[in-house]
Image (tube, rainbow, N blue to C red; front, side):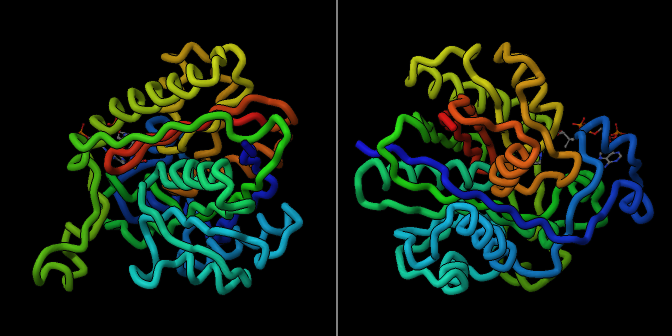
Length: 320
Ligand code: ACO
């Protein structure tokens, strides 16, 4: 059975930056509150649609893999903020990269990139596909009520992409686990509103709303449980994990997660300070940054995990 290996990666973060101090000029907050509660220092704000961010990340990932868009067998685009509901925005990216293949969006919120990576792995392992592009892309700042400090400080825009290719080598995805806890579906949501609400830009339904403390607890439990599952499936001890690449929603969540898993804090990759929470894009952006910083080396064991609205959770174990 072939393995699914990441051969290319790319990210796109829009150039406009909104710092914590910038936010404090129009809502009652402070750099100190945001940094100490979340680890965030700034976020990037996009003036273009999610598909455009996704296209740039995709082109960079294809270039890094050294392949042409026409070679792709499938494009999976994870997003909760598509520019259009139909057609799916994977179709837009597909047209932009010159691909002719299966293409679809998935919405598993912040777990979306790992959900997509799991689907890509299954396609490659079953022999259905040889080259699959997985993208996590979001324009979350479009869904923020900028007058509500509870949510306005947390999110940012961006995209990350990875090319998965079939290989006979002993590397790539070793195991993945996906889950959803429906009891948590009400604690994090953004809807289209109901009835005439949907045409009212002030309708609260339209904006991201959540119960932060409940998410905090459930996120740690969900990621810990699924991480344990993938480690057990592969017979890998947590001591053998070289680096943890978690979803970046809050630095304190990451610290608590690795502490509970008894993994040294230095092994967790954290870049939330620069981007805030970019939902489905956090994991692929973190992979790119870890590579740029020389943190990923051949044969290393990487554990990635995420959680998001649903409440979804996901984990993946890779040999780099
Ligand atoms: N600036 C200043 N004060 C603030 C801000 C802000 N931006 N936001 C809230 N506060 C105030 C509150 O009004 C409250 O004041 P009070 O004590 O006078 O009532 C006080 O700070 C404490 O508020 P809490 O909501 O209890 O703060 P908490 O410590 O729980 O931190 C946070 C909030 C950061 C959202 C945290 O709960 C969290 O990280 N949760 C998990 C992550 C999350 O929910 N992410 C969004 C979902 S997306 C995802 O990735 C799944």
